Amino acid sequence: MRGVQKLAWVEVKLFIREPIALVFAFAFPFFMLFVLAGVFGNDVDPTDEENLRVWRGVGPSDYYVSTYVGLVMASAGLVTLPLRLAAYRDAGVLRRYRAAGVSVPVVLGAQVLVSLGMSVLAAAGIIVSSTLIYDTVLPENWPLVIAGIGLGLLTFSCIGVLLGAILPSARAVQGAGLTLFFVMMMISGSGPPLEVLTSVMRAVSNAMPLTHLNLLVQDAWLGFGWSWWEALITAAFGAASGILAVRFFRWE
Amino acid sequence: MGTGEIFGIIGANGSGKTTTVECLQGLRQRDGGAVSVLGLDPGIQRDALRHRIGSQLQESALPERLKVWEALDLFAALSPRARDWRQLVEEWGLSEKRGTAFSDLSGGQRQRLFVALALVNDPEVVFLDEMTTGLDPSARHAAWDLVRQVRERGTTVVLVTHFMDEAEALCDRIAVFESGQIAAIDSAPALVSRFADQSVVHFSHAGEDLPWLADCPGAQSVARHGTHHTVSGDGPLLAYVGAALVAHGIAPLDLRGERATLEQAFLRIAEHKAGSA
Image (cartoon, rainbow over all chains, first blue to last red; front, side, top):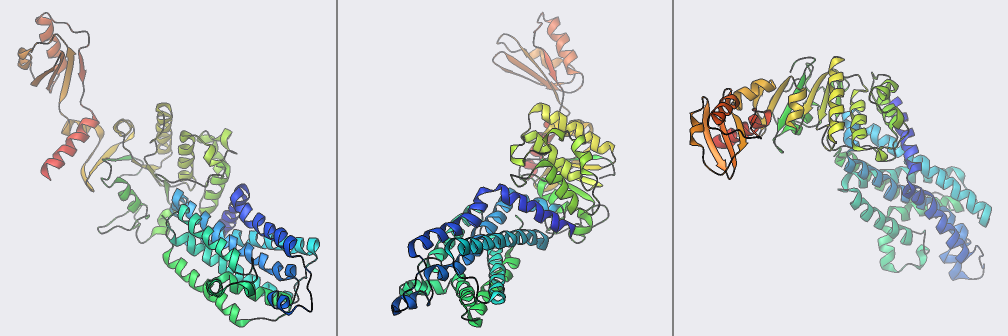
């Protein structure tokens, strides 16, 4: 147990010393927040039915605030976490841990723990900034939002470990992870609203875990209740990734 | 191998040195046969074994921004029976580099850190795989002194190396690997006398053959490339060749004898194997 703690603490320090990790965890979601809030504002015209449909009946900034939290989790799971794991494998760091008798759960556990911690910090930062600067709504139902975010954190941690486990090198992770991240950023609800996507985009969007996570958290945030369907799909992505990750994890 | 010895493993690239030590450390599953380290089977009792051995791995790095003290502190925490790592920092001359990130260390400092990490769990056997590859000569010699110190503290050392002089200088016994098998196993002097019995005498002289050198006691062959003459054979060849040259009125300035070395023995073993294969 002392090993996991120490490893996690060391990883936190390394995370802070690694600019790319900080950029993806903190800069990107905030950048989206400022751009989208600046472009769309938060005004809603109660007579414009089309507008109400696209924005789910709320102001654009209220619509987006929960999706930035999703973006934080996606960046951790698609970029930061797998990049770290793959880079460690490439450099032989994992081999060294293994030779020191560190088990797979300890190595992955420490990485996931740090990833979770950083995501929670970034998510909190986004919520506070959006509320203070743009006066967006706070969650209608805190317990459900927290449950949704918790599920999202677990799911994207599993996806991150899977990508780190199956992709052959850090370079491959950069390619695949970043591509997935940008696709999800654009069509999973954090970019243009889902309602304005073309049918093809919508189909791709439906295959992305972030879309379902965003809907789940957004529903809870805006007081539309808890969608078991979206929760189930999000959890299925996580469970499948987790099982495959453990199955295909390689030390070197 | 025996307790407290420095056991060397030499062999060509791809001859199975690293694979073998990886099996010994339980880092790789063997295809067959039996392996016993400290009375344990590394394939089965991996965890029990790992806490009693130290590993300085070939081609294995640390996170770039990890500092020296953090690495030692971390690996000490990961081991159930760690020594005080502060003492290791002193012993391995890393005090001034305590706060330096791994990526900013020189090759020699990295190797010293790796050996220090291999010793942090106070192992009974430590595996050093090509620890001096990439080091400059003074760093290599410093590393050799450190290996001797490790042994003096009672730790058995398994040393995989490409360098014959390293094996000759450090190892009590040496296993020569060839195509995944141990071709020979003995002390360095014994290997040399068994496989590299020849000594060679070199000197320069005007471009004419000197066939009478073949009459020197022990001489087996005489050869000339331009002005460079060589006489190969065994016994005290240098003395006889010198005497014969002087008797013929020749006194070359560069007359020198080359004693058989481990390198020759190694090459001979490799040739022998290639010939029989």
